[in-house]
Length: 161
Image (cartoon, rainbow, N blue to C red):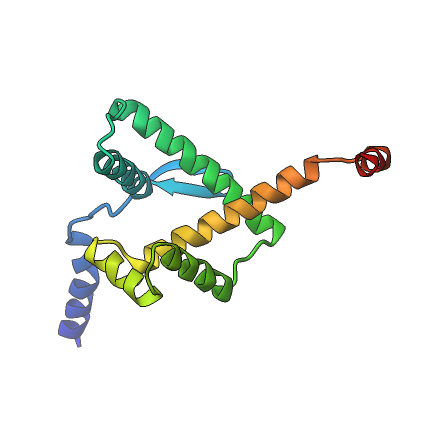
């Protein structure tokens, strides 16, 4: 009985002896959300990759990182606004949009997915990014639309012309 208790105590204490490894860190707190260092690093590497693919001279890393963080903060705030406003993108709508992207590149959806994998890109990551962009576009259209006020006189004047 004492040996069983001793073994139990050893098994419980064993994980506390193991090495602690940091998987990710919070880089920026944005209202109700956070930006992780891995998100910033990934976005920065994607921007650098685009500069290299287009053979365009890059600004300094400091400027690129600052601009990347700023864009991620704005995107996160807009996504939070969209969530509060109840904006949702259905799977059908997302699938149709991705099919249109594939079609505009002269490919079927299957060919597009295959092309992504040969380029080292993930279809799931693309889906998530397209969904975020569609959500952000919706919230931006809604915000701009709510700021535009047209009076009846202005409308009548327009119709008269």
